[in-house]
Structure formats: structure tokens, C-alpha cells
Image 1 (cartoon, helix red, strand yellow):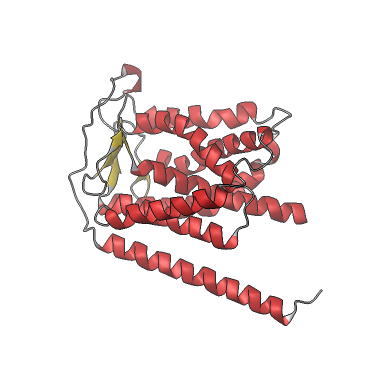
Image 2: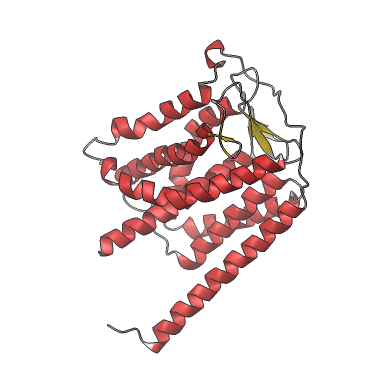
Length: 287
């Protein structure tokens, strides 16, 4: 059935709005990045850890952590009720563009001195200064978190926050933008906050409600393993951190050793993956 002139105009208006939102986000992020000159030293190499675990003092630490995290979707993904294995092709396909963007962002921040990686806990540089483990992080962590999201959807098939989802999303947008503006000089703090806010604006404008509430619930659940994994990466149980941050790039507040910015970074990474995953699932359902 051919599109009517009204529908064509509606599609064009929608594309224009998305383009303007994207341009606005790029301008804001570029302005934030231009306020942070390159740093060639000064990464924080000592944090107040909980304890030092001798077993963790190895170059295989980051690799072992990824193997431990990534094994759960394969161990439990073939259980008949969740049947996560059926969704895995869509998970990996949705992950590809997100991984590419996050790796480019990671490379840029590494070369700008925003953060860095300890050679003591990694197998060495693999891609333009990034350890190969860091590249695999953007595949394995979203896979495991999407497995949690999928499992929660199996247990809670209906939107659990249907009556509150838009209000929660609106409050989160205001919160992220307030954080981004008030911490303009802290490049990591501001970048993650603004990007999370812009992604939520896109959701509110162009994606009907239906799974954001379930995502919020899943995100809260993922915060538990997130604190364990990121706690190890940021030095909670090692003599020094695997991932080191420049003190001027972050606001300086930590949950044990995890910078608070990592929570918005995780939110952004997971919502990006879930957004594309749900889009692919919807297209598959129509076909």
C-alpha cells in the first residue's frame, strides 16, 4: 500500500527531529570534550581498596573476569523457559554498532589521558592502545546483562512500571542533564550524563512505552554484579586498579572504589544495547 502524503510528511518530520537531536548531542559532547586538554600523566594508581587478594595479582585477571562473567548466559541460556539461546543472534547483532562506538570512545579517552589500563592485570595492548580484554568487555558485559533482562522479562512479562515509566524517564532526563551541566569540567562525568540524557530523550520522543520499565528493573538488578566486576577492575581487591582514571576527569565520588560515573556509563551501554535488541525483535515479529 503506497504511503499517503500525510504519512510521508510525518516520516520526514520524524527523521528531521532525530537528525536535530543527534546534531545537538554531538555539539554538546564536542563542547565538553574541548574543555578537557590532553593529559599525559597523573592517572590515579592507588585507591582505598577493601583488601588485596593474592589470586588476583596476575596478568590474566581481566581475562578471567570476562570469562567468569560471560559464562552464565551459556550455562543457563539453554534452559527451556527463558530460552535465551534463541535471542543470542539478535543480541550479538544489536551489540555490533554499540561496541564499535564505545570502542572508538574508549580509544579517544585513553589517548586523551582520561583513563588508562594497568599492564600488570592485562595481556597488553591489542587495539590502538586498548587491551583486547577492554574490547571484549563491550561484547561480554552487555551479553550477560541482556541475559538478565531477558530472564526478568520471562518472570515479569508485563510492564511493571507502566503507570510510572514516563515520569521516571522524565526525572532521569532532568537528573542526567543537571549532572552534566554542573560537572562540565569533568569530562567523564559530563559525557556519560549528557549521552544518557539524550538517549532517554530519544526514547521518550520516538519509542513507545513497553519495555523501559522492565529495563529500569533489570538495570537495578545488574547493579549487583556490576559492583563486583567494576569493583575488581577499579581496585577493590587488588594492590592497584586495572582501570585508572585521571582525577580531573571524574567528580571524585566512589562507591568503595567504583567511580559514580561508571553507573551512568553502564546505564548508557546497556540501554543502547537493549534499544537495538528490542528494535530487531520488533522487526522480526512483524516479518
